[in-house]
Length: 457
Ligand code: UD1
Ligand code: CA
Image 1 (cartoon, rainbow, N blue to C red):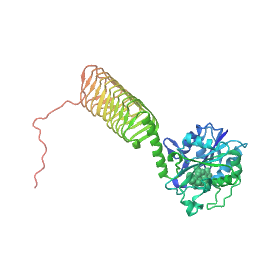
Image 2 (tube, helix red, strand yellow):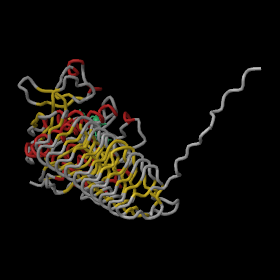
Image 3 (cartoon, rainbow, N blue to C red):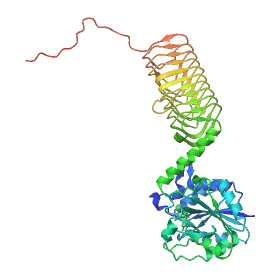
Image 4 (tube, rainbow, N blue to C red):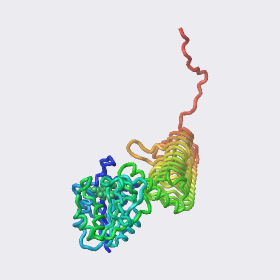
C-alpha cells in the first residue's frame, strides 16, 4: 500500500499570543512541526505534504530542503478545507492518507504506523483517547453497540455529548479514494461556519465504510500545543522521554524531572548527574563521571573519572581524565584540560591547554595560554592576553609556580620550574628554575605618624 502523509500546519494558533507561527515554536531544540516531520520520516511514505497558511513564508522556509511538499491553504476555512487543498496532489484511488497535526509534536512513529496499518487502504481509522477533561475537543459518538457513529465538535455538541470523555486527537488515516470524495462533499453548516474534516466520519458510516478507533497508549503522543502552558507541558514530556532513555542506558539521574537535554548526550558507565543540569549541543561523557547540581554543558567532552562540581559552566571545552572542575568554574571554547587538572571556584579558562596535574584553584583567568604539567597557578592571577587590538599567548612551562595576584602580560614565557613571586607583573621572559619577582620593594618609614583629627575649637 502507498502511504501519503499530510501534516496540517496552516492554522493561526491564536492562543499562543505570539507573532511567530505556532508550529515554529521550539520544543527541545527544534520547531514543533519538525518533530512531526521527524516522526513521519520513519514511515517510508510515498510523499509528505505540509499544509501551510498562517505564516506560510516562515513555515515553508523552515522545511526547505527537506523531502516534503508544501501546499498553501488561503484563507483557512477549517480542517476539512485544509484537506481539500491537497486533493490535487493525491492521485489515483488506492492508498492510505495519514493526517497528522503540526501542533501535536510528540506523536511516536510506532503510533502513527499502527494507525496507518489499521486503515490498510480500507477503513477510516481514528486515533482517540479518553481524557479526564475533554473540554475543547471533538467527542467520539458511538451507537449502543459501541460502533463509531461520528465526531461532534465541542461547539456543536449537546450537553449529553459534551459529557463524553473519549475524544478525537486530530490524527486519522483514511483510504485515499474515499477521502477525496468525502472532503469535496463537506458543508460548513455548523457553529463555526467551518469545513470540519471530522464530518467525514458520519459520511463513512452512512456509506458502510468501516470506521475503526485506536486508543493512544501514551497521552504525550496526542498532546496538542495550543498555548504556552501546553508548550511547557510538551517540553516536560519530551524531557521525561529523553531522561528515561538516559536511565535506560544506565545513567543515574538524581531526578529525571530536573534534567534538560537540548542536543545529544552520550555517557559511559556509572555516570551520575545531579539535579538541574542542562546539556546542549553535543556532549560526550566518559565512564564514572559525576556531574554536580546546576551545571550547564554545551559541546563538551568529559573524560573518564572526571568530577564536575556544582554550578559549573562548560562550553566548547574538553576535560581530561580524573580532572576536578568547579564548583563555580567556567570553561570557555578551546579550553582543554589534561588528566588530573584541578580548576576551582571562579576560575575562567579560554582557548588554553593545561598539562597533567596543573592546578588553578581560585579566582583566576587563563586565556590563550599553554600551561605545562604540574603548574600551580595562584589565586587572583591572570593572563593579560589582549592588548586592545590583538590577542597574544602566554606559555607557562612544566612545574612553574605562579604566586597569587600576578599579571602575565602576553606574549610571555615562564621557563620550566620558574617561580613567580606573588603580586608580580611579568612582561618579559622568566628564566627556568629561578625566582622572578616584579613588584615595588617593600619599604617601612620609621617615625611616620598617622594623621589625627584636628581638635575642636
Ligand atoms: C480539531 C478537531 C477536533 C479535535 C482536535 C484535536 C476538527 C474540525 N476538529 O479541532 O475534533 O478534537 O482538532 O486537537 O478537525 N488547520 C489548518 N487549516 C485550517 C484549520 C486548522 O491547517 O483551516 C490545522 C491547524 O494548524 C492545526 C490543525 O489543523 O494543526 C487543527 O486545527 P485546530 O484549529 O487546532 O482544530 P481544533 O479546533 O483543535
Ligand atoms: Ca488544536
